[in-house]
Length: 107
Image (cartoon, rainbow, N blue to C red; front, side, top):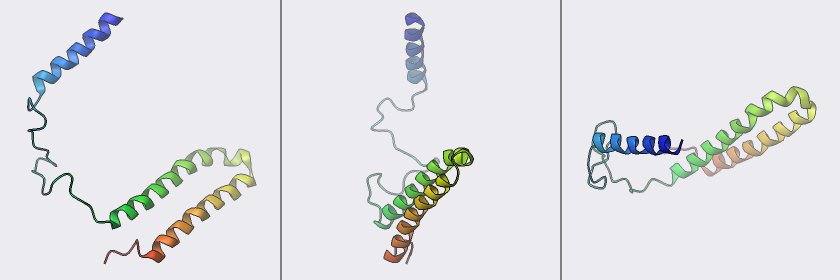
């Protein structure tokens, strides 16, 4: 089993050496869909994108909790429904705060 694992790893290294585009990856130019990049990879983003990202993560975590909740809500009863609406209320308070602060305005 050890020889098989070592052979697999050696085979992957061989495939990499044969198919590698550039010997020095730091000299190879990054590309997006075949086009050269329009700006440097370490360029700064506008601060508004961080707020949008946080809102996206909040709703992503909401869905992360809602899918398993949907499977057990019938077994848990009304308490589970109250807890989910409390959770959604906290998220809605965050959205209202972001809206009030102008995070959803693009101009």
